[in-house]
Length: 551
Ligand code: ATP
Ligand code: MG
Image (tube, rainbow, N blue to C red; front, top):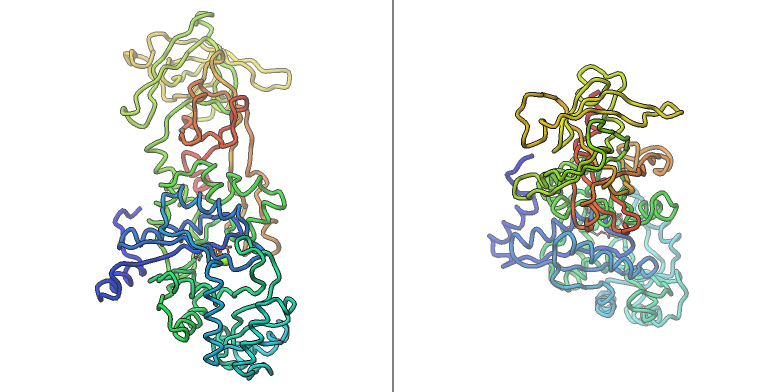
């Protein structure tokens, strides 16, 4: 990875603005619509907006774009705030576009009084019919030339609830032949007799996105209003409205939305996964939501590093999911405590070890000495991984096999003498001899082995449920495939194992991060209880998918 941070195009624009004395400091905003949980795409926008003001001075607002009364809920507002804080950012003001409804209503009157807006009685179908196409000009509505007085009166009546939904709209009077379709008398207000999560039943007319967003930016004196590329055609209208209203000139800038392979990122699609039961809620650890990733064990630093170091682009692209995992491993490798857990256990009995004996062996806790050591109990009967034994060993097999020796991590070298299978032919017990002089730390190096495996003591280990996650989709870009994106769900994205883990993990807290030696990075699940310990695999130690491609 390139450690030297290069400038992105927004930083260049801002530096020029500051140098030219256009602004003393900058103001940005993060404007989520509270109609779902935040995902990793939003994290990109959050890191960008908050990162810019941290770098150049100024502040960032959190503004809920809650102009659509039907879809928004308080649950989403709360989760959005929690997610931004968890990512490590602090907004200056918590604001709601709905707080500006009265101001926006006055702005609408300003346009009407300037002859720049009119009340239209056409239905939405009729409006669409007259709109034209990118190559054909549109046609004027028969209501376009109403007098200013009539428009004022009708707009007030719209507000007073005298008309049913859809019967009238307020439109800007621009140009039905404009080459930019969005400039062909765009809708500013529609009638919707609906309850709003904050304003209740105070309003039955609601501003459209284009008549709320730029105006909210202007009210808050946002200097750099950053949005994704699909809003490029909206910029002309954004500027037109600010100019005609003669309000603070915020400016809109666009960057490419973040797309990640093997997942979907629209709230609408994520909502379907939740509602149709493909995942267990918005915070399912397989979801690309911030809450899902948090539960999975992602750290805020890993997400911030990903967003900052991948940067932003002016053109759409798909970033490989493994790049996100790269930043996650990078962070976890430096911080995770090393512990032993056996995920698919098989019993190993040391025949020459005393029956009742327990030894306390010293084990290192972390990636370096600063993390200290802990004692773990060693006994005659141990659990080891089933996959660490091969009855007929392959070439270069350095783990257990009949007659082969291996080191038990932080303990002794053992040699396999025998093994036993159950009635179904499954391996049940491995019998070994241990060599007392090979104890870790005391070993004089006379006996050499190439493999080291992890283990836990049968008597001391505790049981835990371990959830192994894989990608949620089988294909890179489920949204671009034929048919429904849900047809491409990976049926094996969750595997539940009954594991034996070392007793120190009884004290695990949700914020702790662990490396289960040789098995990957894990964390305690938020819903784990002391009766039913649950650990989530955050990520494997290496990129298993990369290997598969090479094979
Ligand atoms: P979705 O399609 O997932 O619902 P949205 O754009 O409708 O996304 P908003 O709540 O309106 O979601 O977005 C809040 C902010 O986050 C906007 O400024 C938007 O541009 C940005 N954003 C949303 N998705 C992405 C993404 N994938 N990459 C970068 N920024 C994003
Ligand atoms: Mg949106």
